[in-house]
Image 1 (cartoon, rainbow, N blue to C red):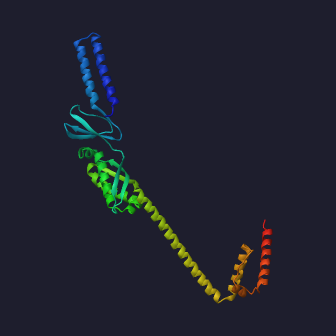
Image 2: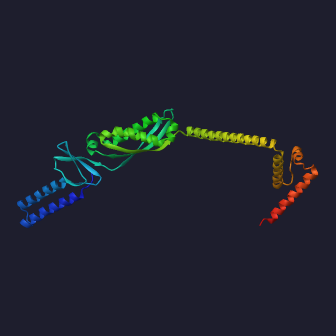
Image 3: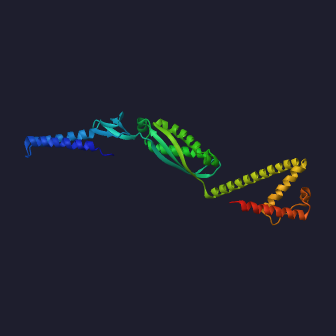
Amino acid sequence: MKTNYFAVLVFFVILGLGISIAYALYGVQAHTEGILIEVIALIIALIVAYSIKIADQWEKAVILRLGGFHSLRGPGLFFIVPIIDTIPYWIDIRVITSSFTAEKTLTKDTVPVDVDAVLFWKVLDPKKAALDVADYKSAIHWASQTALRDVIGKTMLSDMLEGREKIGLELQKIIDERTEPWGVNVISVEVKDVLIPHGLEDAMSMQAQAERERQARVILGDSERQVAQKFEEAAKSYSDNPTALHLRAMNMLYEGLKTNSTIVIVPSTALDTMQLGGLAGMTAMTMGLNQQSRKEEAEKP
């Protein structure tokens, strides 16, 4: 129960006025009339202090009169009738967050998981929240937990790991339907974490790694197939054009000598095609290419 400092101040002010009046009329001597005035001032101070109530900006006070619902008051200053009126609930109408969990709950594919979630909710009807359910905060917590277990039991593990947003929307719909009769509105549900057994986590990691390797092999095989197709197309082009084949062979030989001028292995058929004239011609060509290569390197800045 929060302390009403304003009511305490009013209590002492009224009591002080009563004592001052008794002192002004009868002095410091004890007279029955003076004591009576002080007692009356004390009673009035107690009644007025008890009648004064202050609700914060985010609060609603539920007032019962002789056990029946009377009204909602707040925010700000208001008064109640002592003894007749009571305030059993101060309802917070701000957005409230509540965390809830589901431990060792089986998914649709019988995998035990631990799920942590956060519920964002707000009281829209303080009267229903106070009168239609004994403890609305506890009721919301248990409704959220049971809804989470129901959703987990209907969801595959893979869908749960990938579709947290979808699960949150489904939970919001279910919990909101359950809490609407209590005057509570569910704003959103956020699934924080989904924990699975360590053994299963290792197995899923190995499965993911194997899947990535399979995809890499498939991509590599597809690349080799495409390269083979291009080679086949090139072979068809060169088969009808000996000059193009000769120029291509010369270019390949030049690139090989330029990269590694020590040893070059060339098929004899290629030599015949390029008409290099045997070992002497090949040697002369290699020396010429080496000289050209050194000249190009010397000209570089």
